[in-house]
Image (cartoon, rainbow, N blue to C red; front, side):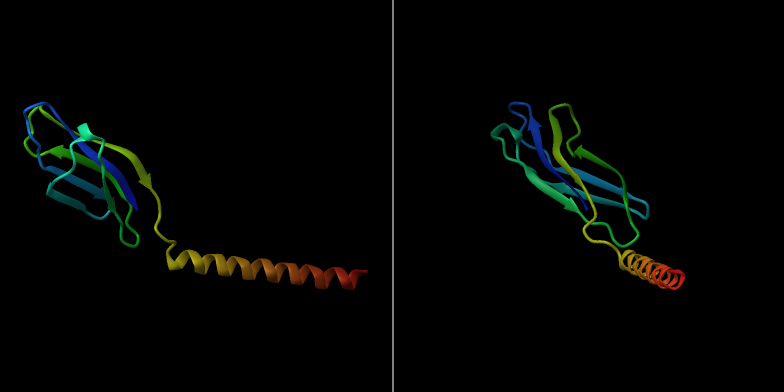
Length: 116
């Protein structure tokens, strides 16, 4: 999961500009154009979040104001990176590891009682 809070700072008399967010992953690039976000002058922020598919991870992101001149400045805060849930393979490996530990413990307990 990749998320952040976003707002746009606009110079006086400039209005607002739609923004474009491009999220880059190891598998593909995802572009979301024409998004509207609050003006930061009133302290309001909007949350934008993206979830990668299985085996995919985030590598970069880019945020631009669609009008493109100097009067618009999108900004972000509270960036969050994390995994929504472990993949099934993770649980399988943990289960196999637990079984191996239990087997070794049982084998060592059986060997210690015979040598006493």
